[in-house]
Length: 254
Image (cartoon, rainbow, N blue to C red; front, top):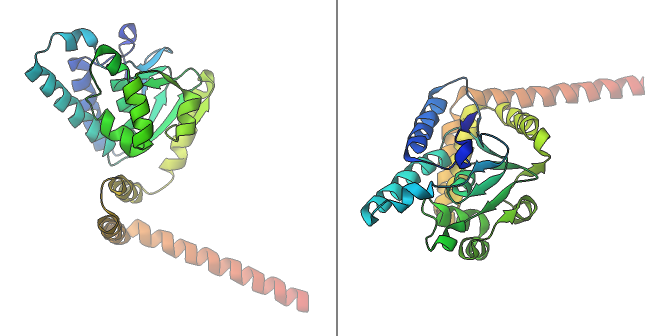
């Protein structure tokens, strides 16, 4: 589990925290014992309250561009991570914090979670992939509603939008996330990686290209021992069931 630890700043991203998060993603990817990556924020008030505004205010336009490009690179690394990712949202997920959640595969939220892009209220806009991820995951109309109004949206609203997997009471959040993570971890890691890559491309490629991408990744996964073992196990189970039914039929007839 990766925990953003700046509770006095509502876990807002400083350049140092972003760099540490980048390294932590690399470490999680390299660790073969890590099957699922869970991301959360320290304390009960915030998952992440976005960028540190005091740092942003001190940038010139070139610095702002570089800061956005750096954040995009880190969050796209998260978006494309070979392992499934879960945002455990325990409070505010605003601006960069919402972009962080959207870059994850799943969002599981406490009842007190609040989501939004407040940047427009500061006369700015999302810059760490928010406009692109919001359109991909919410559709253009809903993305415009969230980005252009700047208001906070409840966990219930985001569940209705289809971007939150489930909502639970705060004291049940960790157990719920761990239980969900265990269901994902039960599957073969390479099959999960190939499926995730294909799903990510579905939002970006024309249908024909996406189908070719899917078929190629199916074949790559099919070449592995795990896929063959899974298919063989299914055939063996079916044969055993058929044999059991046949025995029962013979006993009934005798």
